[in-house]
Image (cartoon, rainbow, N blue to C red; front, top):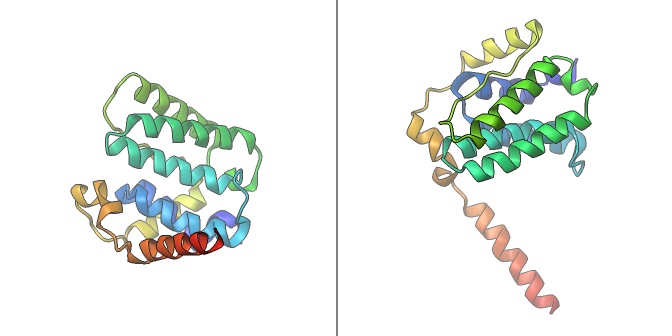
Length: 168
């Protein structure tokens, strides 16, 4: 199986091109990255995560954050030219889209999503997955990171602080 046909990558593409749930894109692809390249901050999957994160920031009006993270995504993609994770994506079109998005952001244009330029095989798999996505309101997608249960994250932070204070 091609690594871009992995369920989590297909989910990423479906969330990105389907309901534009960029927060969920980040979640599913980070899980895939941890499975296959944990710790490799220059893996192409990190670039894809950054791409979704940039669009999430832009939609929320955080243009400065969007520019910063999209520039990192573009750099990641350029450093990984020829990588297997660009075989099922039109690489040149993706670079053009990210560059055009950055120009749009820097000139103060309003949010406008893009579609990942998928190969016919990946597009077919993605469309099948899009059909299964739940519908979400634009308000929910806009504020999703604040609406999720973060109790486990907060507990982990508290535990980490306690460990650090015991060492001192």
